[in-house]
Amino acid sequence: MGAVGRQVPAVGVLAFDIYGTLYDLASLAEAARGLVPDPVGFVELWRAKQLEYALLLSVMGRYESFRSVTERALRYTIRRLGLGLKEREMETLMEAWLRLKPYPDAARSLPRLARRHKLVALTNGDRDMVDALLRDTGLRAHFAEILSAEEVGVYKPSPKIYGLASRLGDAALVSSNPWDVAGALNAGLKAIYLNRRGLPTEELGPEPTLVVKDLDELADALEA
Image (cartoon, rainbow, N blue to C red):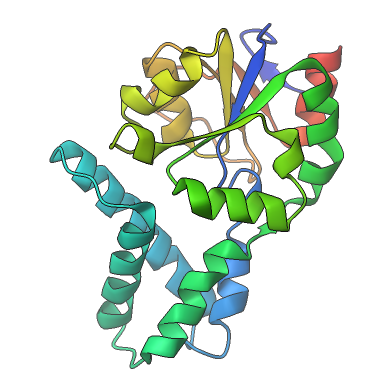
């Protein structure tokens, strides 16, 4: 089945989410293997707590770096599961965020998308973390800018961070996170839902502008 949605958006700027959209968070489970009994469950709890902390900070009108939020979530996860990890082992897990593996379609399709659109990263991640990740995996050259939550002191899905993209012109978010898609649409951006896992449509939030299963399908749709 091909791309579905209200319409194929005519936009000049594609604003990409990073974590879970371009980069596979399963890489974190690989780093946790040998350190914890259930790497997949460990990472799921860690990620959920990371997102919860970021949202809580935003609701409270406070901001901490993504690195700090991620470390706090890690320490909670370790305590919650009763694990006795050492500081060096925790450092190994934190460093895994800098060694995430990109989805294979990123290297194939980003060059195609960059030929017709300005690509920017729109991320909750700290700018230096995202810049290093993109460079180390050979994807940085495709992106004109990195727009980070640290610029506005609040995390997605706050309208403020999506405003960074809307200032660049007619833009669409590309994200595999439904809450991110809803946040972008609420802020007035178009939003392309990269439904990598074939999940059902969310019950809350507006309908995405376009739904695709991967970046190859997105590139095909925008070139049609």
